[in-house]
Length: 420
Ligand code: EPZ
Image (cartoon, rainbow, N blue to C red):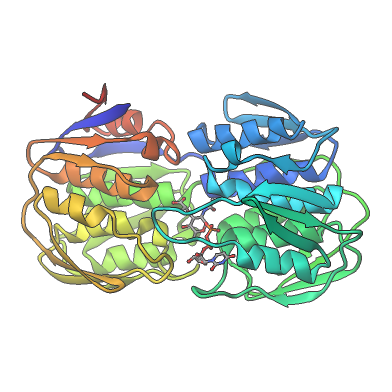
């Protein structure tokens, strides 16, 4: 297993280019199952998660070719069975259910199981399929969804924490080939849902309202092949913005979509970070001084839960009390005890973490627990005095393309080493 060895205290300087979005690419890759014609997806990041999804598409019978960020998929003859061994590796694979149900009128998929950041049930996905007329049977750890035909209908897809991103994506994909019109109320508004709708419309679907809480899908007979460029990864962008500020450096972030990051930019400004936008570039540097700020994670366009951990690393450096409240996932504070090993002062009170910021951090060996927690530990290690070893970076490789190489280009002293 690999780790990152980081010698901290170096302000990051220079340019970094953002990769395509993991969370847009995964459902778009699943959507290629909706047609037997070739689909070409550009800007697919080379990550263990996108490679997993390609394996899952192959296991269903599709041909895939990945070349330098361009993925070509042809799903001529496919079946609807995805086994536990594959699905358990990546929860996001649940979004093949909608396309399989739409195209084959059946899907047998292993239930994704628990996740370290929360229970993450799929009841809303299944509710949406049932409203479209599917029969759902859960047995032996598998979901069996079957339908003589899918019929468009109106549904409310809001849940405990508001909208569901992959639930909206799954139902939207299932409805593309249904008879009649489907209206999804309380739909997720994330840019990744909008990007998926753009791809589906390029395949001949008839979707309107993506990006708003009400999405309308008029079913069509058949979908055809299409080409698409995936949007830049807004979570990777936010991660590099915070790394620049935490190390008191100055970084130009290229291929960034500021319009996808309003809540993050607003909160960073409040914490004393200066952000200038020049076309598709963002220039990020720390202002006079960092200051405390309160953060609450919310569905888009609120502050993203996928940036909560990284923001905690920054606020641990900002003098004063910051309160970070996690409203999306029940147990997404695994990074708190690891940040404490670097000297951060953080207490958890129910859904909130109270950060007493301003104490300098010092390097130590720490353990990554999930994708975004590992990014937070890398940022803290870059800001800390001395050496930090971040273990189990396989978590990070799931969602960040060549992070260590990109950081080294910005002057970071970071190495990928075999874990002892
Ligand atoms: C997507 O997960 C992202 N993953 C997550 O990013 C992200 O954290 C999450 O959206 C929220 O923004 C991908 O796109 C692959 P949800 P998803 O359904 O769709 C509850 C990362 O770090 N819920 O919007 O699985 C659920 O438990 C990952 O890149 C139900 O109750 O998240 C959660 O509390 C981590 N029933 C809330 O809704 C359901 O049927 C939001 O989850 C579905 C969800």
